[in-house]
Image (cartoon, rainbow, N blue to C red; front, side, top):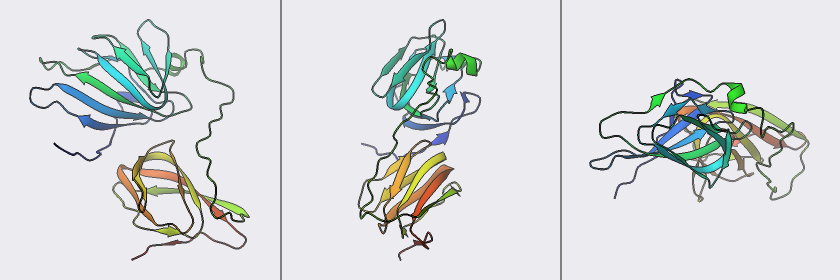
Length: 243
């Protein structure tokens, strides 16, 4: 048995349009030639045209996205969908225009060492394919959070905050409720006593008033997020770092 920790890297620009991140899950080892990566796409991000010598299987684990094989239509996919790509089939895959997407990419590495072959980038017109599922207005509820206890709010202060790669936010407490949304990068987030999670672009979070936030630690690419501070009359945002 082996336990590995998340090691997220920024996807190489020559293989992707837009922002994407790759987390290796399984690497070829010994007689096994299976490779599994978790790939997270920001809204609108996608791969270039490419093909695999032995094919590939994609399992969408979160969000919604798009895939296309050469000569076929742009197909919409969502969480729970599986895409089987034939050996040598030119294709691309990525997020939907207005939503992020995460999938597992599973493939067998060829014994002769031949790797994935890249083609050209997927242009906007090709990606949108006439706007098949692009609505004039698209509304998605990302978070519906009750405030406990209920509190009066006179104003909301919005801050754009950036943590450099590897910076740890440390144990902290806010004097009022804070909502946030990740713009770029990724961060390990956890409320004390609760499971931790990795937040990436498009994800939201809630830090309750007076609750100890155990982790807000930027990963290798750093993180930029919007923080929404709910304030009563005459109140200013305060943060304390318990010993």
